[in-house]
Length: 613
Ligand code: C2O
Ligand code: CU
Image (cartoon, rainbow, N blue to C red):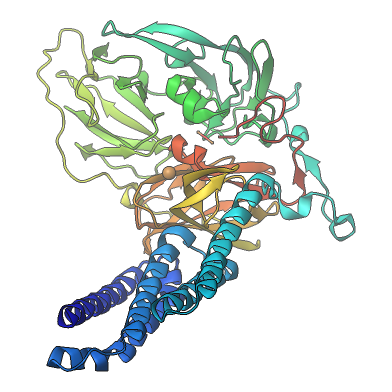
C-alpha cells in the first residue's frame, strides 16, 4: 500500500515537473510574439509552479525513497501537504491564464497568492489532524476570500464607473481642466445649412416578411428591403438621411460603417444619441468628403438587429459619377442559416457587355470572415475599406478574405466568357456576371492561400503620418475570460482584462497621432473596427507592411496575431472601437477612443433602453 502511494506520489511529481518544463517552453515560444502573451506566466505562474514543485520534492524525496526501498512509511502528512501545495500552485497558474489574464494587476495577483497560502495551510491542518475548529476556520477564510473577490467584481460590474468619456472630461476637477474646452457630442454635428447639393433619403426600419429568390420566406427586420436600399451619392453632396422606426421594439439607429462622419452623426445608441424608438425618427447629416464603398447598420443592440437585416450599402462616387462602365455592389450576409450574395440566396446573374470595365464592390456585412472568389477573369483589388490602393496589380484568382465589416473593390474588364463570384461559405448563392448569351461554363476559383493586402500595391516613399505632433501609444489585448457583464456572469470577450463599459477609454487630443497595438491572446478571430477614423497599418506580427499604404477601418486580428496601426486624431468625439463579430462586442469587446474634453449626455440603458453594441 505504502509502496503504491509512494509510486503515485512519484508519478504526480514527475507529471508536475514535466508540466513545468512544457510551460517554460510555451513561455519561450510565446515570448517571441510579445510580452502580452507571457506576462502573467513569467511574473507569477512559473515562479509559483517552480516553488510548489520544488517544495514537494524537498519534502517528499527522502521519505519516498525510503518507502520505495522497502523501508518504513515516511511522514505522510508533510508529503500530502506538499503535494497539495504543488497542485494549488499549478492550479493558480491556470487561473492566472484563464481567469486573470493580461494585464496582471496587484489585487488579483495578491488574491491568488493568499488563496494558495490559505489552501496549503488548510491542507496541512487536515492532514496533520489539527483541531476541527482550525480546519473550519481556515476553510471559512478561503470561502470568504473567494466570495469577497467574486462579489467585489460583481458589484463593480453593476455599479462601477462607466469609462466612455475621457477621464478628464467629466468636469469634476474643473480647476485642472481649464485649458481644455469641453464639447458635447450633440454639438459635434453637421449644420443643416452645410454647403453641398442635398441628397435626401428616408429609411424606415420595420419588421418585414421577405421572400428570398429561392422561395424561402424569412421574417426579417429591414430598412425597407433586404439588404436595405443602396444609398448612392457623389463627392461633395450633403447627405441627409431621416430614419423612422415603424415597429422595431428594441429601437434602432444608423451607424455609417467606415464613413468618418462628425461624432454626433455616428449613430451609436447611448453614446452619440438615444435609440430611436417605434414611432420616432432621427435625421443624420454629413458631407460626402471621401469616395468609396461603405455600409450602414443599426448600432442599437446590433448583434441582434444587424443579423436580422438592419443593414444596407453606401457608395460615394466621384463628382460626375463612377468612371467604370458598370458598378455592382454585393454585400454578403447570413440571414438565419441562409447566405445572401447581394439580395440572392441562389445563383444570380448580371448582364454586362463584353469589354466593359466593371467595378465590383464586395462588402462583408456578416459576423464572421467571408472568403470570396472571382473566377473567369483577372482583376485588381482597386480599393480596400473605401481607400484606393496605389499600384494595384492584376490577380489571377485569389481567396479574398474579408473581415466582418470590411470591403474590397475589384476592377476588371468583362471577358466574353463571363466571370463568376462565389463564396467559400456556401455554394448555393453565386453571381454570374456575363455578356448576354454567354455560356455558363465557369467553375469557382480554387486558389489556395489568402490574398494579403499588407504586401499588395506600391509602397509610398512619402511619410503618411504627420511627424510634428505628439504620439500617443495604446494597447488593446484581446482575450476570453470569465467576467460579469452588468452583473451577469459570462465568458466575456475582454480587452485588457475588462468588458464594456468598464474598459478604460483610449484618450487622445486633437492633432495627436495614436499608435495602437492590438494583440489577440484568444482562440477566435476578432475583426477590430475603429469608428470615425481610418488607421494606417504599420505591421503585423512584427513584420512591417510592405505594400501600398493600407488605410483600413476594419481588420482581422487572428489568434496570436499582433497588429500595430496608427491614426491621426482629427475627428473629435467619443468613438467606439470594437470587435465586429457583434456577438463578441455584445459580450464585452467594445471600448471608446475619447478625445479629451468631449462629453456625452447619453447613457446605456435608460428610457430608451440604449445598448451601444
Ligand atoms: Cu459597423 Cu461599431 O460598427
Ligand atoms: Cu471578436
